[in-house]
Amino acid sequence: MRSINLRMKQKLNEVFSVESNDLGANFLTNYFKRFTAYLKVAPFVYIIPITFLVSVSLYFLLGRFLIKLVTVLQYGF
Amino acid sequence: MDFKKILISCLSSFLIVINRFIGLIFNPYKTMRKISVEKDYYQPAFIIGIIFIYFKFIYYLRDKIYPATLIYFLFIINVFLTVIFFYLLSKLFSKNKKEIYFSSFIFTFSYSLLPTIIWFLSTSILFIFLPPPRTFSILGKGFSIFFVAYSLSLLIWKLILGYLAIRFSSKQNFFKILFMIVLYLIWFIPYSIILYQLKLFRIPFI
Figure 1 (cartoon, rainbow over the protein chains, first blue to last red):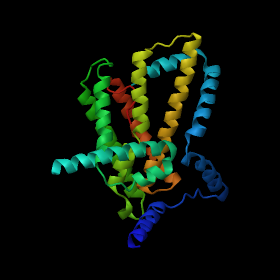
Figure 2 (figure 1 turned 90 degrees about the horizontal axis):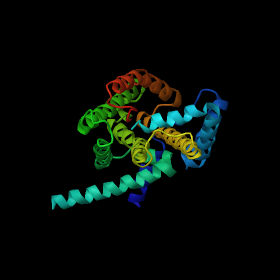
Figure 3 (figure 1 turned 45 degrees about the horizontal axis):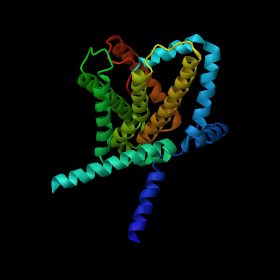
Figure 4 (figure 1 turned 135 degrees about the vertical axis):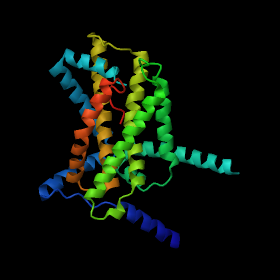
């Protein structure tokens, strides 16, 4: 029983280790919390499609420059 | 007996590192919160060790101007400067200075190096199998689109992990973290340019 209480206390300490974010205005805080909720669990579900869309748009926008950029990035390691 | 104990601790830490890596992919918020209260120093040692192997590996692909160990020590200095900078700023901004732990910064920042390791390692492996320059053929264009999407995904993941690392270590709110990051970039961008001009790092390994 004591060990369960201790584990419970540790978990609560971990969860409440940081105060929740307050951006000053209620609507801002609400939007921030709604947006960050997507990034807290499995963010790649949203990140991968968005980055593919951005990448394709960048190709149509920049054209050959994007291919040159990739060449530069490939030397970047 | 002692050696056995050390070996078991090392193996268990290694398994925890793999578990945390998977956790950071699927559950970054919860995992980074757990990492911030971690006490096992074998874990950052493992991550730093993997990076040492990486620098030894890419030495054969780079121009070989500087020895791999020197580049590795520079990387250690970069990380140490970053951790100290955010730690001192957090101490400065925090009302309750006793709740800021240096160890928390070490653990969270070392785990936030995961996207960096993946990007640098994959780029160097791609350098062997698909060496640049990229062509303007359909395959070249397709690969370029894929590579940009892949790099952007890892960059966003890196930003998320970096933000969470500062958030759980410094325990500051969003605006203060943003301010800290701006202050960090003020000195880190010129510093990176100097490293680039000295041909030490093309893209900073951070």
